[in-house]
Image 1 (cartoon, rainbow, N blue to C red):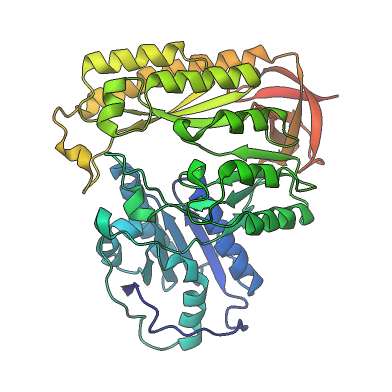
Image 2: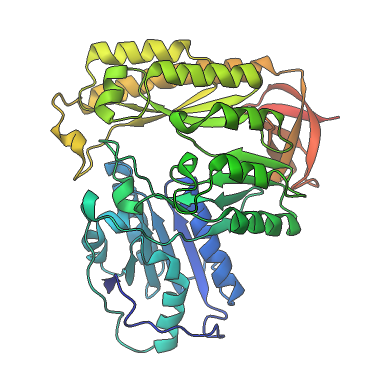
Length: 457
């Protein structure tokens, strides 16, 4: 067992049949970007003959892509790794992702982990897996330990492309990775490195490949996608203009974009574009200007409100999702009350709520006034209640209307689900129209209260 930062022990080899028939399981925690990267690795392995292990089969390969956004995420990663090792004894266990980058020694100490890959190494995961099986029964892979770099020593890691579907109808196209923002609560720049991106030409080619495979919807993913172009001299606006021209792709969604990077030009283009959906995900993090200042965010509530207002002006039907962190160090009762009032009055569709988690090495640790865990939970529940009210009001507004829905299969027999152009989840009785866009009349809520019942017209 070892974790590696160099490739002295690995040699480039042409693909062979050494992996043919090997069984693999994949486990991903965290963001859409992680899921896209895992799906790409799975596709490459499957192209080399690897098959997914059935539920009752013991896998030869376990690939775990981790998250480290909170201490809870770290705990879930450890649990998942231990469970996979117990379930698949003797498997070659590869752990990558943010938790692996930030705490490699901790991961490597887990009995049964074979290889820990940081940000610089994960692009060669398939090669390393292949090399392991070619070298059997050689001794375990060796390598130097890597550690968390300082802000000043963060290097420019290569951009590793990823465009994959996984088990879902929509594809996830990774256009950018890393972040240069260094918000006080966040370790992502240390986990994923500096902002970098692919070229527009290469990304358009990947979208064209998705169209040839029959894909109809692409979600544009990255860590800070509005920062696109840092390494190529291009811009995010240039990118979406080019992607909009790809024939066969009916829908694009922008996964998340910083409010200060969501320009009027981007919004105006999306409003009149052929394929970009009226759907935005914009991180707020706090509705208090003082807390935003403590977080070192690059905007204030006035700018955020202006962006939401502009979206509503240009695309009245747009779904607007918003990320919020509660319990940040320095968030007093008065500041939270101010933030909550701002969120109540903001015309958005949903809040995604996260409790602040202490992250080693972050500047937030120097901020006085810690929020008690039980108070974080209480504040989280208050924001979730606001979110539920906003979402139900948004859905209710469209009951009785007709919207286009991209259908996808579900685990329930005879039932399909999908999302409208403006991201309303819909369920209907059908099993024959997977990956098809149909016009649906939206009815009332389903039994779970998480989707509207639809009828194809």
